[in-house]
Length: 439
Image (spheres, helix red, strand yellow):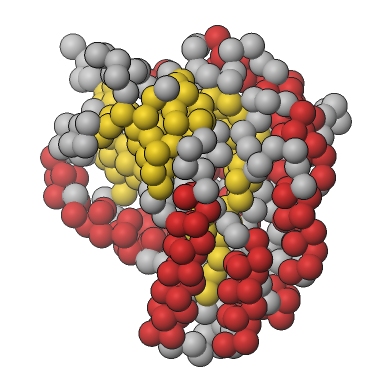
């Protein structure tokens, strides 16, 4: 009797990685593998990795070291994703018990790599260079989210911001055809999903290889797929953010009223050093388009503090931009050097304590902005999609179309199922969430 093929997969990082893992899981199942819940149960142990944040590599190697004892029990190990692409065959040197190293651009070759692994090979690599034109598409996606379907419409990045490792780990920008995207959207709708999220390192940099649809036109078309009630997209790059995206959100009710538009800094000088290729004024023009929409569109962003050479005056300009835009959410981080990036040659002379101080100042100011913004919604009624329950508080957890968490009470004797929709009146607000009651 043949030994059952089992695997364990742990995912680090962003939604792109999470969706890549859904594709990997689907491919492995297609190859006869069964997913298990722990490393100890698995014959094949996989880590899908992210290298965006500081010390990402150390985290992966610590995890590999923690479980290398299982190698003696016949387990096989594989490292996937951005750290795999970044570190390459050096992973075999640091962790000799690893048998498979594959970047995301090579996942389409997984069946072949798995066959080689099963045949007894010990050092298998899938490390495409950044020139590949292929994307990882599969009909075998094993969707893990019960109510939201993810579709990657563009892979990679051509922007080469000086701090960012993505172009070196994900490769150049390469888009899927609008025909294939819409076919997958219809499959998702047919499966009963009501929300779709379009993904890309720079999702709005999408260029249809068929020449049929712009990004805004693709958004609108996905929003018209039968059964779909919400369409989200992330992450946008300001350089490719066009006015017709706002017009599409205004015209198609299923497009969610939320835009995530990373600014990174409010200083023109720092933006130049970051190679962002826009000015604060140029960015604020896009914000003005969004704020002039007929619908109220929620705005969120990313900010890096303590970039090499950032002065106190530069930081003040970021704080000024924060006050002007009045974001509903900010993901802010201290700068940390990443391998292969142009910023590595810059002198990172800002002490970590100063970076931490600036980050704290920014987060405290943003918390106050959000406290005021969220409190303005008390008394309003929103459609909320249920995501789960907070049993300790006796509340239902959900999310508005503006991507704001809403915790609410419901008089129904049976809790509404994840993925269902309810009208909720907002009765209270916190800096990061809303509180309410089902109407």
